[in-house]
Length: 174
Length: 192
Image 1 (tube, rainbow over the protein chains, first blue to last red):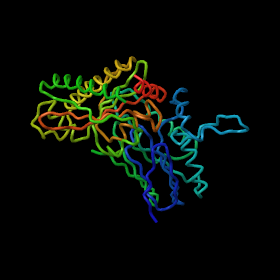
Image 2: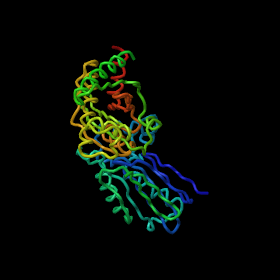
Image 3: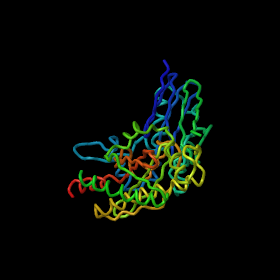
Image 4: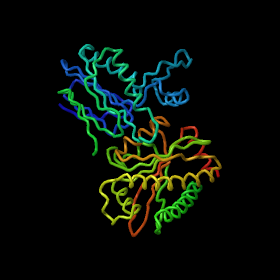
């Protein structure tokens, strides 16, 4: 049965059903979709930041909210590598891992990118641009083809990813 | 939070005076609600895909954060009529002049609030040059959150109403600060 699954900011969903993955009002955030056309497995991540961009102070604040950032071992709190899906790199790793678990072949994967805008053009903000660059770099490292993009500019975008067809539809408001 | 009420009253009065001067007609600004909320909880008030006019001022000084003034699309059209002296109900698209007038209005409203807020709490807060965006609410607000703070940050949400010629136009003023600073502000609002 087909479902419409809304993916929240900082989250990702992998599915092999005939689902539609949607996410709305993407500004400087970056939506990354990965698709295995042969096995009809799709993933959509709504990322916010590259971790390189985050200062130590901000990263500490971000980590404090992430349950996956710390684990207790033998009574000592030990910091682990951040595996938080709001980060571009971590989200791509996680998408590949989950897709392969569900039966996808990494070599089949194709990527599309949507978002990375700067909603306030007068403001010198590079968050969006850096998200796009980080994703392209990571995809290249992983050997995943980038087959489509709607990035940059100063417009918000809403995204719908049909996992049955692999088609990604981008809506802007005017 | 009596202190917050006092801040709101003073800020509304200041902004009313400044707006009347800008527009050269009697304009009143009321503050109808002020509350501390999670930013996501704003969405029931304004849907993420709803088109809004947003004026954003980075805030620095002893505390860092962001001030964001939001008007729903229709309100921003009505305000443009007033600001650039068009026949009421005629603005259907924002021109460069409208955007710059709305930016100035945002500057006045945010500036009035920040000045009163800063005096009441005796902390130095500086509002910087405003920027303007006319797009989806979710896209605008998420960039500000990403820029300054973490996800699910709390914000001081102030609902405003600009009243002129029997019209009352609703808008929202959001103040976001980094979390430890925000908690300190809440404590001082309670204690003063």
